[in-house]
Amino acid sequence: MLVGLDTYDDAGVYRLSDDLAIIQTVDFFTPIVDDPYSFGQIAAANAMSDIYAMGGVPLTAMNIICFPVKTMDISVLQEVLRGGLDKIKEAGALLVGGHSVEDDEFKYGLSVTGTVRPERVLTNRGARIGDHLIITKPVGTGIINTAIKGNLVNKEIINEVTGIMSTLNRAAAEEFEGVDISACTDVTGFGLLGHACEMIQGQEVGLRIYPDRVPLIEEVLNLARMGIVPGGTHRNRDFRKGFIIGAEGIEPSMMDILYDPQTSGGLLIAVKRDDSQGLIARLRKKGVKHATVIGEFIDGPREKITLFTQV
Ligand code: CO
Ligand code: CO
Ligand code: CO
Image (cartoon, rainbow, N blue to C red; front, side, top):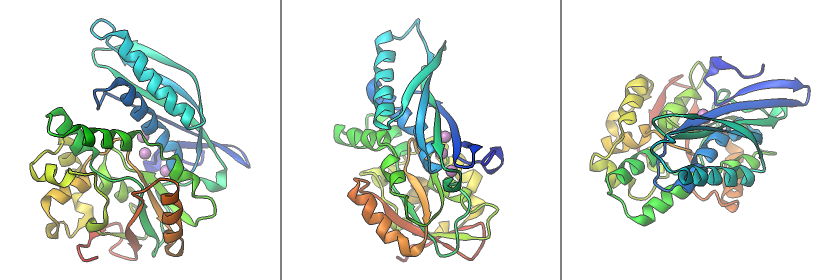
């Protein structure tokens, strides 16, 4: 076993031979958008993201379905599965099976198996002093999804956030070849600061993040200022606030965004400083248009994130 339960990493990694390891991960959740096809795409992109975050490529996937067959039309499930399958195909992976149970609440996701060369496995640990921190998707899906439930956003923003969540992190992961990357993870339920914390916990480094540089989904700051914030934000803050320095200097609504739980968020990549602008250029050329350097790993305070407003 190369990566197991102890580091809270994105997925498990098991070495099969000197040049081949398998990555295994599973993710499923309740619908977050009304459109079933989009929900299928988002759930599949989210599940496969953990394979990309480990530096791997998804190979096979299995559907996980909990469906209220007595109260929901089967056509909804068919559309969700069609969306998921289209994403699996886009990723170049194969759907090989699945399992469904009856449940009061609809849930869908995938278990995914991927492959990676053992020496290319990326975990959330290992960032070096001086490395830049890159994020590849804008932040704010939790806030936007809360606003969607309250009918507070227009169609364009719903389309934008749906597109962001259903975008595979593949384009990002494919550009890693030849770039000096020391650590990687993806941004999901613990929010940007929660997952950034995982990159420094137990490590001999600290992290400086510039909130002004974090790419945001349109309207997110306005919605946060209106108090449209999901419950998970507060849980994330309570869990991580002891690791954060400088929060009092940041607008409270911006802090809510930094703790906002993300669905199918972008990758967080620790990359050698000299390689970061080249990687950003490659990512943007590949259509990862929000890829941005949002911070850097520093020698101290260790295991803390220091927020800086001055860019
Ligand atoms: Co993950
Ligand atoms: Co996951
Ligand atoms: Co990882």
